[in-house]
Length: 187
Ligand SMILES: Cc1cc2nc3c(=O)[nH]c(=O)nc-3n(C[C@H](O)[C@H](O)[C@H](O)COP(=O)(O)O)c2cc1C
Image 1 (cartoon, protein in one colour):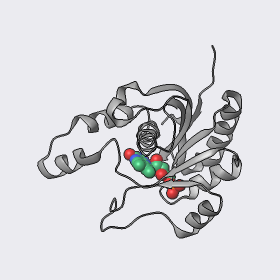
Image 2 (cartoon, protein in one colour):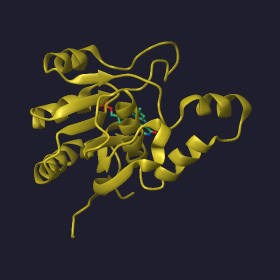
Image 3 (cartoon, protein in one colour):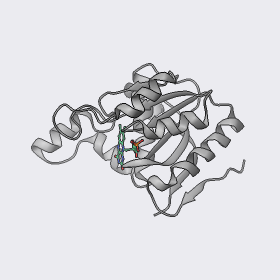
């Protein structure tokens, strides 16, 4: 089978609109219901929901305290709009750093889960993020693990990477399957 991958010239937020257009096409082609979006503020998830109003969208933000204190980085402006649209928002521990980051921050070195994250980043930041948020959403019971879903991630802000994958839970991480890459940056 032949399939297309769209490569962005640079990573970053300016690719968000084009990425959403490509996701919309692939979703229609494959008949996929569930979409998981990494959206720290809620902005990218709102854009996805405007483009695909019938999709079952899960919007995932950073865990509280990611930037210090106990703060959440969701922005009230987007939260209100996402709530009104019935979009599920989720906050939880990051599956590809977790307590491992606490260990390496305190004692140095690197834990196996951080090596997995670093390896996925060989493709792009967003590839790692798509895998990470799919595990988080599956563990929260917000997406199925017996069907393909589409995940979108990016490089700090906006979204520049999307894939079709079959999610898995944390306990059987290696059953996750990345089936198609829709787009990614080619830095
Ligand atoms: C759980 C989680 C982990 C993330 N990890 C990374 C990362 O390792 N590298 C990165 O560049 N961006 C990371 N991001 C940022 C996302 O890839 C994406 O660019 C961002 O959530 C978009 O937010 P916005 O809608 O507010 O622009 C992460 C976001 C979340 C929610």
